Amino acid sequence: MKKKNIGFIALMILLASSQVWAEEEKDTAVKYNLGNVIVSATKTEAYQAEVGSSTTVITAEELKRIGKTTVGEVLRGVTGVAAAQNGPFGGLTSIYLRGSKPGHTLVMVDGVEINDSISADRSFDFANLAVDNIERIEVIRGAQSTLYGSDAMGGVINIITKKGKGKPKWEISTEAGSHDTFKEGIGLTGEIEKLNYSFSFSRLDSDGISKAKDGVEKDGYQNFTISSRLGYRILNDAELSLILRYTNAETDIDDGAYEDDPNYTIWSKNLASKFEFTQALRPWWDHKLSFSYSETRRKHRDEKDIVDTTEDAQSWFKGDNKKIEWQHNFSPVSWDTLTGGFEYEQERGSSYSRSRTIITKIDRKTVSNTGFYLQNQFRLWEKLFITPGLRVDEHELFGTETTYKISTAYLIPQTGTRLKANWATGFKAPSLFQLYSSFGDPNLKPDKSKGYDFGFEQNLWDNLVTFGATYFHNKFKDMVDFDIATSKYKNIDNAITKGIETELIFKPIRDLAISVNYTYLAAEDKDIGKKLARRPENQLNFNLNWSFLEKANLNLSASYTGHTWDNAANTRKVKGYPKFDLSASYGLTKNFQIFGRINNLLDRDYQEIRGFATEGRSFYIGGKEAF
Image (tube, rainbow, N blue to C red):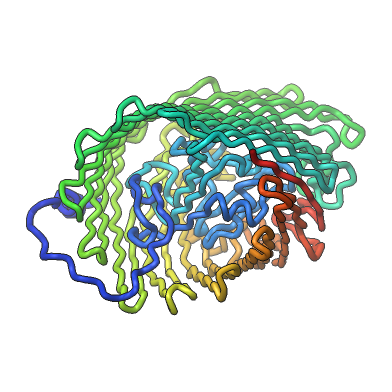
């Protein structure tokens, strides 16, 4: 980036008190619907309407209504998100945010980075992330490297767990359904004087279905998840908190597209933890010091069987990430918040693979990065919101990387209109696998991107109808990809993703809500002139939620996913498909509720990835008691 651009951004960020603004205008119009509070877009609490970034917030109440069991399933209904899974019940699940690579999306639990440090592209597998104990899911689309550094080129997904409050409350649930599927869960939340706590445990067991299309043997699945959050107020203005989430999953898989395998198994363990201290030093100054640790372990085993008597393969992968962050927020005046921070991050990884007598491995490797970020949120007349940001990262291998972002939103309360725009750069450091595996190169440089978006949102008839549209355009260059000619990873890929996101929310009566979103995506590999694989050009999502009889709720979700290409050469096509899911709940008593769901209501036969099966019409029913 040119020095004059860096100077311009820095000047805007530090411009905090150069003049006193005129008295705020009196607003006589109906107040604009500001949406939900979101943290991930600015690292401070703000309403969605006050940030220029394109955001989606899915609350705990919405999670209950739609009846999905994993975060991956929930995200399929979000604007700008495409998903692809290698078969249900634990099959590898990848998320493509605005057409970017899976490794270009930073995934966090309570701010803890959980991307797999030893996977090929350092992406996150959403197959095993359950919705248990989640307060809300925040999705921010577009480059967010200014605040989060590497891996946030496409956007950020932050899963925020529940914080205990009020009297102690227990919740016990059980569910059973198709494919001999059973799930049990127990949770506890509450607050005792200075201590708040939240805890949940769940276990899911299923015989599953064959992950290979046309396969005959079932691929079973087990998932064991623990989530906890503790907070202790040591002073009136200071709190210590400890966050922990652990998942242990066992998944039977198959050899690949259309290839059955009766004894190919993957064990996966994921840990996310954070110790955090927050304190308000002055009415206008607060800070947060945190240490986080995440770890991913995977083990694969595939021995000989009646299908293939020559198979003999084992492998294991271990990666972890440590990060120290110190963030300060300054609000010298009501219309300005300056946020600055420091991060030190270290990731490690090792692996071992054996196929018959051939052994490949990565001895434990460590790479560190130091980052400094600065951001200023201007709130002028409660209508104009301007947020410039600047970040400098110092990577152990490739040196200094500077990213910046300018985000703006403007509200017109008199007409219920919101305008927004963003311009941002991003980068992604090469993964440990790309650097140090037998296919790697320690001299690789980071992926880089530039992108912008702009759009509007319109509220009508006292928020009875809300609709909006956003155009986005992203340019990626020097992306690391596998070069078949040399059997090595190289900085060889250049791509463009652009499109339109539209959303409509209609609430004709208090107990009925209808939402529709549509995404058009053009994602092209500029080097070969082909469309990027597994990115649908057209996606449509529909959701209807009806709360009736005070105790009953009915939710219908429908989607259409357009055709995709299963390979980079665009020679293998996957047909588009519609899908309908139905969920319902009813409170039999004040504390006891029954619920049920039907997946793939119309029993459509479809594929997300060529050669991998999907679940047909399936039924699940359960009960939940709170006391």
